[in-house]
Length: 290
Ligand code: GUN
Image (cartoon, rainbow, N blue to C red; front, side, top):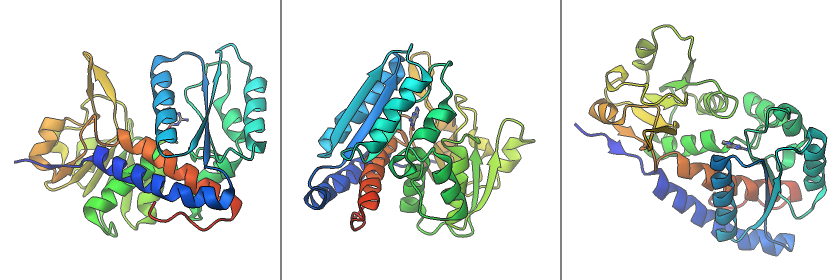
């Protein structure tokens, strides 16, 4: 047996190229390139890596990157004052405050301070609410990237059984809303779900976003299922997903690898969201091909 490998890295490269192709039209109309502001608080090594690669990808797409690094002693009020300055800055189309924030800072208050029109993470309640009621919204990057991979693989998702494992505001909940918007039949499973293998076995589509290394086993899957693995877990210095990849390859029809599956999609969608946020805010035509 052998499932097809869904090449998220290649898909993300194509999306980034389409974003870069749409940048000149934006710049001509706006009189400046699209701009993304990324705020990093503290010295978390993983966050530093993410922020660096976001800056690099932003510049590579022909967009302007504004990077703000603050010490972990910064107060919530100071951080919110920076967010408010970025809200007012006309060169900034997207604002991303890297999570997690230090424990002394209430991330809800910081997210609430972001102008929803610049909320390229889609974390503001205004965007989460718009997604839930089916209005135009900025949508969190990781689940939107997963949806792009699913539609590329499956085409119409209408009527398919989808099981999302994980109920975070960043991945699980928006993923379920997106799948519902595509007319899938959606189940959100989580740590309290009874008989998870039986729930997963119903699914044509499995999206695993729990953060537990190799938790989803191959024999839980319905033969032919399409599996999207959002997990990035470090085990003995090696990256593994939330799905037992070797086992899943025996039953699934297609699966995203870790690394090289969902991960690269997140930054590509962030660039796409920045371009779309800017065009929407300025009343420009919707960027083509993204
Ligand atoms: N930390 C891990 N993933 C993310 C993300 O998608 N956005 C932000 N802001 N922080 C993160």
